[in-house]
Amino acid sequence: MTLSGLTLAYLRDRALNTALNVLILTLAAATLTILVLFSAQLGERFDRDARGVDLVVGAKGSPLQLILSSVYHADVPTGNIPLSTLEALRSDPTVAKAIPVALGDNFRGFRIVGTEAAYVEHYGGRLAQGRLWAGEGETVLGAEVARRTGAALGQKFLGSHGLGDGGGGEHDAHPFRVVGVLRPTGTVLDRLILTSVESVWDVHGIDHDGHEGRGDGAHADADHDHDVHDHAPANASRQVQELRPEVTAILVSYRSALAAVRLPAFVNRQTGLQAAVPAVETARLLSLVGVGLDAVRAFALLLLLTGGLSIFVALYTALRQREADMAMLRVMGAKPAGIFGQVLSEGLLLAAAGSILGLALGHGVVAVAAASFERLGEIGLTAWRFEPAEALIVAAALTAGAAAALIPALRVFRVDIARTLSQAA
Image 1 (cartoon, rainbow, N blue to C red):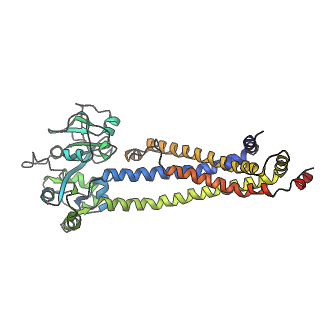
Image 2 (cartoon, rainbow, N blue to C red):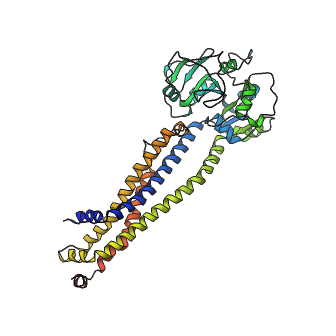
Image 3 (cartoon, rainbow, N blue to C red):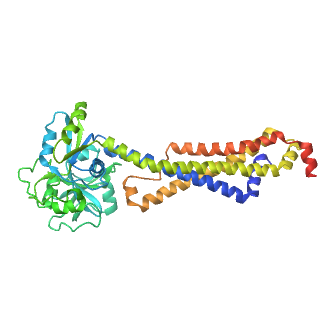
C-alpha cells in the first residue's frame, strides 16, 4: 500500500473522529464564506446605486433615512419639499444635474417613482422593449419588476397607497399603462416602476398648471394625509394644506468641487430642508452593520482554530497509537521524510475537505436566503459568484490543518525503531 493509500486508510479507521473534525472546519468555512459574500456584494451594490449622486436634498429628518429612501429605495421618505428647491438647484452654476424623485405609491410591492428620463440615463438604463414614458399614466418597468410581475407592454395596472405591498387602497381613477421595459442594469433601477412626475401629481389630484412640460416635478404632498401617516410620522403634526406640486427628494451631481464645500451647508440652513451625502451615510451604515459582522467573523475564526486544535489532538493521539506501524514502515524501507509527509497529508486532507464543503455550504445558504427573503434578493445578493477572499478562507483552513499536523508529524523523526518493536512484541 502506498503512503497516500495509507493516509486514507487511517482516516477511514477513525471515521467518527474524521467526520467531527471535517464538520467543525466546514461550519467555520461556511460562516466566513457567507460573511464574505454578504459584505462584498452589499458594499458593491451600495456603491453602484449611489454612484454619481453627490448629494441628496430632502425634508428635515434623518439623513440616513433620506439616503435609504431616495437612493436605495429601502426606507420611507422624510417628507416633501417645495418645487422651488429643484428650480433653485438647477440654477446653481456648481450643480451639473438635479434629478427629482417622487415617491408614495407601489404596485405589488415595487415602488412607483415619478422622475425624468435623466434618472434612467444616470444609471445607464437601456430599453429592452417599447419606449420611455411620454403621456399621462405611462410607465417603464425595471427588469426585475417585469420578471416578477409578468407585466407586458400595453398592460394597465393600479397603483396602491404606500411604499410596500399591502399598503392602502388603490387609485382606481388613474390607472397606469406599461409602455416600456428596461434591460437589467444591476442597480436599483431594476426594481422600480418609472413614470413622469406629472403622472404622480395627477394620481393624487394635484393641480400642476404652469409646471407641465418642464418634467422637473416630483410627488407633491400628494394626498398629504396618506403620505404623512404612511411614511413620515415625524411630520404628523403638520396640518393638511392645499395640495400643491412638491418634490420628495432631489439627487444632485456636482459640476465642480466648490459645490461640495458650500452647497450642503447652504441647504441645511434652509427651513424644512436637509442635505445628505450618500458616501458619508453609506459608510456610517456599513460601519453599523460591520459591528455585527465582526462579531460573527470572530466566532467563525474561533471555530477555525477549534478545528485546527481538534485535528492536532486527533493526530497526536493516533500517532502515539501507531508508533509500531511507523517503526515497521521504517524497517520496510520507508524514509522518515515520506512518513512525515504522510502524517502531514492527513491534516491537509481534513482541512481541504472542510474548506471545500464549507464553501459549498456557504454558497448554498446564501442561495436559499436570497430566494426566501425578498429584501436580500432586492439588494442583488447572489450565490452564483466567487469572491477572491474565498481563496483566503481555503488557505486559512489548509494552514490550520498543516499547523495542527506539524507537531505530531515531527514525532516520526524521534521514533526509536528497536525499542518500539520490542515493546510491541
